[in-house]
Length: 107
Length: 115
Image 1: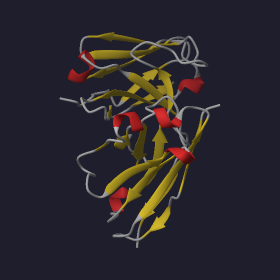
Image 2: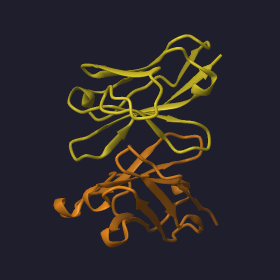
Image 3: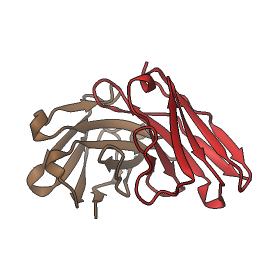
Image 4: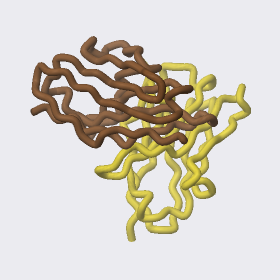
């Protein structure tokens, strides 16, 4: 199937590490992408092709992949990292498939 | 600098039509597929569809739930992509974004369907 499953919410204290997972059969064959979306803003690509960090994204953001699961890891979490995070992959036609989103709360 | 700027949103009555534009600059528009994504208030990102480049015959793909009401087109001479929306429903109310497969997004244009 081309569904992607994310936890609805993750909470972490400042300075700790946040891990957000995304699961789906498509991830075994297609790259995953991660977006950060702050309230009132457009999505921002933070991880490209499973683990590449686009220019300008802090090194605290990293991505990994294993089989049908991918993980976004945010080290040394800061208050500014509080946002919604979406994973995305593609189906066989090239259509974008999104996870339901994870709200990261910095306690 | 890569830029995408959506326009054309607004208030429309149920059953009405609207055409959104996505003006781009800073990259090879003619060689790029362009995607449209929407987001209802408080909800997640929803794929609408995309249009491929001339090399790929301007082929289009749409979300199954929207096929038939929404059409995507492009004008490479103007570096602009379009989203034509017909038979609009209240549930089509959302922020509409264009994106170059996620690498860059516009700021979005708000469509409100209401009587």
